[in-house]
Amino acid sequence: MSKVLFTTFAQSIFSLNVFLLLSSIMLSLIIHYGVKFVNSQELNSNTSSFTFVKPVLNFTILSSFFLVMYIFWLYLRFVNEKSSFYFLKVSNIKSFSNFNESLNILMCGYQFSFEMVGLIFTLLAYMVGLISVLSLDTRLYWKNIKLVFVCYFLVFAVVIFCSTNDLLILFLAYEALLVPSFLFVYYIAPNRRAIQASIYFLIWTQIGSFLVLCAVAYIIVTTGTTSISLIKSFVFTNTEINWIYALLFFGFGIKTPIWPMHYWITKTHVEAPAGFSIFLSGFLVKSAIYGFYKISNLLGGSTLTIVASTFCYIGVIDASMKMWAQTDLKKAVAYATIQEMNIIYLTVCWGDSTAIIGGFLFCITHAFFLSFFFFLVDCIQKRYGSRSILEVCGIIHTTPNLGVAVLFGVVLYSGLPGTLKFISEFYIFCGLLEAAPLSCCILLFCANFFGLLGFLKGWLNCVFGMTAHNQDKIPADLNHKDFLIILVCVLCLVFFTFVIKIYL
Image 1 (cartoon, rainbow, N blue to C red):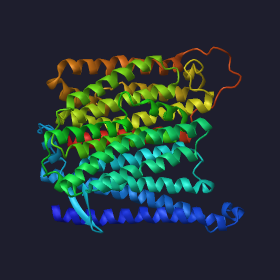
Image 2: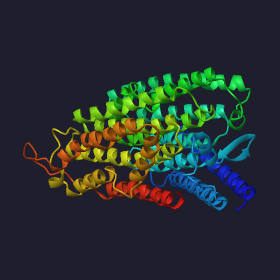
Image 3: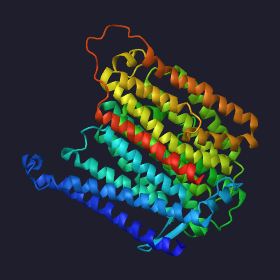
Image 4: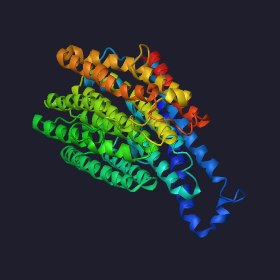
């Protein structure tokens, strides 16, 4: 397939995808405000004229997902035919960006581009979003049609964020991700503390967004353009690069999150429902990784990479130590998120192409593994009424299917050879070992031994520990819907492992 033909196909498919998402947003918005003029009993009736809207909305989001999948397949096929999909032949971040060849299209006067990293992050948003919605049980119904609007607006912002070639639109789409995220927690908050956590989440991320805004505004004013393609050719001074890099690192780092600005994410995870925790950990924090990579790549390199990497190293060590002291399973998973996100952020800061490849593969692994564990925590809390390691014991004896699911996740999380986590960690540590052997060994010990044991000990205690008192009622085991969500997580990991092994 020629590049011109691929671009034509991509432009048509992308335009159709945007039209579907905008139509869904408008339809859900009309329904949200239209219910005020309709009798609520008629709205809840099976014979209501509104009953056709729900399958229509489901169809549009599925169609949007398959359109993105088709673009992804076309991109892989195009790059494969061009014989330029080489991971191991790049030697620095600049040539790595050349591997991520951007295919530009125009729509309504704005330029959009497709690259491998952006397409992967878009697919992550759809897949993790599906798991998140399934985990919300029956909360997304007519009385909460505003949540449907929030979900579609979030997907639309993700598509624009991962495909735009305009720096200003990139920042605006990044900020647009924050609004539905806050509303998501606020609307379905189960208690007052969850509402407080959502406000805490809003305040901290806005501080980071202000720092990013300062960097973006300076770049636009200095270069006189908002086009990312044109900014790449502009030469900044070393002082400008260091200041912009520092603003971007701490601005995106707050949302990643890096040490010592990670307290907000543990509080949000503990208080928020499982559905939002899955999407926050699976995609939202990774949007900061993608934003930092895409903008910092315009600078051409900075002398502050060692300082930035030091913050990430401390974050990994700090999270690994704190996992040993956690008695709340959800908080332990939150610290696992902090540990792995600091590793991913380290790979982007370090600049080695092999480590960056491993970092982006680790983003995929982290998304579905942590979604899997957050869902397991939710299953345990529903059945045992607690997430505490001190109160939940003997899962394998009372709910054997749930216990087996936990053991299955624990084994895969340990990084078996051949799995996607093993491949991603192999690339990360190979990229860091050549440049900094001692630091790499410390990182390997903290992430794959010390922190891993601290994370797994709590889960194994819950599975094999003996109950402290006789249970009056044996909780129900996993149902068909729970098996479906677990199967979706596993299939997503298998899909990306299959793709990587073919094209790597």
